[in-house]
Length: 426
Length: 105
Image 1 (spheres, one colour):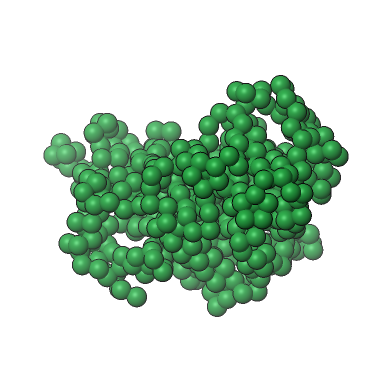
Image 2: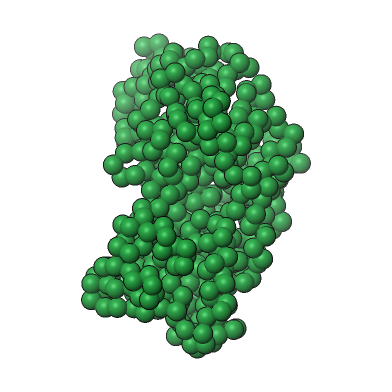
């Protein structure tokens, strides 16, 4: 309020109402007829499932269809605990048959092969089409194969990325468990933005935890494309305290970035050095999932620009993009963000379909990282809507201090995993 | 303010304005929208989960004091000191009222 003039206020208010009117004027549904409105949600991860459920909670009369190509979902949050042998693999896997039961959500197991934003139809591989008034895409990420020379999809069959959960998680787990005594685990971490910014460092921590019990002379090296990283102070403290001498983080200031990867011999060549590894984990550069590209909602960055008031694409009317695929900076790409965005996007869509102005959002992201099985550190942000730029702005943020209460955060982290799994897949 | 009402500001806008007068953050976020973010840790009904405390149906005064004390660092917590600073005092008061009026379970 302090920074805005009275005139500015009025304009904002009117603009937002006008926007709502405008939006519903090219919606296929008349205001107040929610019952005949159709929303298609594509992608059954943390974004998609939470969006479908939130829509039905807010407007039970709405027709909601969830399209997902897989029968089961393997989650990324918690997968570093599996890689470190702390949790079994099957805890990551969830059957869609158990999700969203009794919520009157139509679940279609199919792949989307086309999106016509003009006639508002989604075309499925089986030949069916689904009409929509609003489409929510939550396609997650895909990789920029070969952006790092020598690391394409075929290389990932022996050099895991384990940045999508499933067989890749198991592969990395098996390689670490069978590594020679005193071997080196080398993790390469990508440039921002990417899925789960603190993930590579949680992974290094938990692998070191496993190795300190099973292979105490082994080492973990993180070769980074960034000169600083999420929760760096607390991670660095945890590594000194819990795994002294075991984890080494290498900045591109020392290495000059990755030149290429020799997958056959498991050697990473940087501009200034070469790093042989016994287990090599390459976390590749990323972009929005293929489905986003198909729908024409990605820009030159490979991600999807949205107006975070509604998460509607800036490129295609009627299509909303949530989760890792959207550019909602400064909000990071996380399951927590995806769930939060899903709920705000759903509320905005219900408002638009009812001919009302969407409410301004106040989003939160809060990410826990385990540094050992019972200790966690976190990063938090609260994000408000900036009307002048139609983007999010950070209203407060913070990280766990190096001398923070890691044990209490560890308890919260375990319960948060339970909660998000129950609300998403339960 | 007086000037604008004299010029006939639409009623709805006026209500939105007046309820958000003290917002320090530029735009007025309604109660439902403010509360939506809290669900990420406290659950969609504010019911809590395990060690994550319930917030629905708790006494209004206690909720508001807790939020204000987190914001001013008079009460320590792992996370809430960071989160509460993303809201104006008026917004924290509205959140306290909102959750106090929600059923406990």
